[in-house]
Image 1 (cartoon, rainbow, N blue to C red):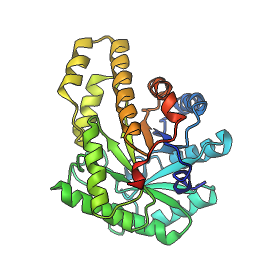
Image 2 (image 1 turned 45 degrees about the vertical axis):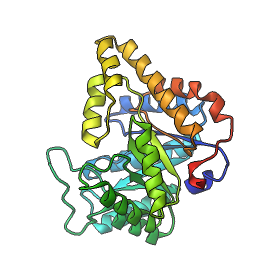
Image 3 (image 1 turned 180 degrees about the vertical axis):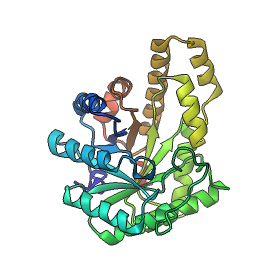
Image 4 (image 1 turned 30 degrees about the vertical axis):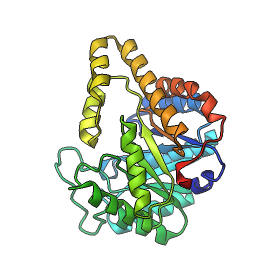
Amino acid sequence: MRISSLFHQGRPLFSFEFFPPKDEAATAALLETVQQLKSLKPDYISVTYGAGGSTRGKTLDLVTKIKRDLSVETVAHLTCVGHSRAEIRNVLNELADRGIENILALRGDPPKGQDRFEPHPDGFRYANELAEEIERNGRFCFGVAGYPEKHVEAKTLELDLQNLKRKVAAGASFIVTQLFFVNAAYFDFVARARAIGIHCPILPGIMPVTNLAQIQRFATLCGATLPQTFQTQLLAAGTDGEAVTHLGIDYASAQCRELLKKGAPGIHFYTLNKSRATQEVLEHLRPLRQTPQPLLRDI
């Protein structure tokens, strides 16, 4: 099923993101996590794509297995990094042959050890070029990434938003945001996107905090603001991992409640291949999952 069709069901969408495991034991553990989260009835599960296509085979195998064996719709991430145009076309053909209908089109981060993105000599430089190639293929529904607090490489919010508009104009049906911890940034982002003619659904990306050092690193890498009050609470919890996890679940639950009540079309959870935090947040959201909301895509 195409993700675009899910936004017409009149209720918020909920999706989970995983990354391909490194070995067979980790793969078995991940599939167990997916099985646990399947009981929460996600609308789709997405699987990331390693730098330079380093997890290409694992990504394709995982999205296929989840869709075929677990009967959950999937979205395969696809990046420009390290691939020629011919290789991208081969990946698209393989995805189509496997029955995968949905893609998240990304430029991708530089491979480990490199400070800046360098396109393949015969590859795509920007995500909108990859989006255009997917659109030409004609067999996929695809989404793109949005950055409420702007991409770290973008000079201004305005230029970053124009980049997003190019990706949507190339044929994207939905947008998934980078993680954020300040809801005002998301609502401002949506308002600015609508003002320049971007009207597709914009799914907010939420990552429940379970480790302070880890989330500080992620926030720095993606340019997300981690509120000082929240950081102070996490610091006070110290090395008490259970206390940190509870604080993270409570904060993410409060974020999600406000987002849904004010019209976000759903929530995309960055799970880090774990189930507990996402399960507990969704349990807190149970009443909102069962009640139709006024979705921001309609504003």
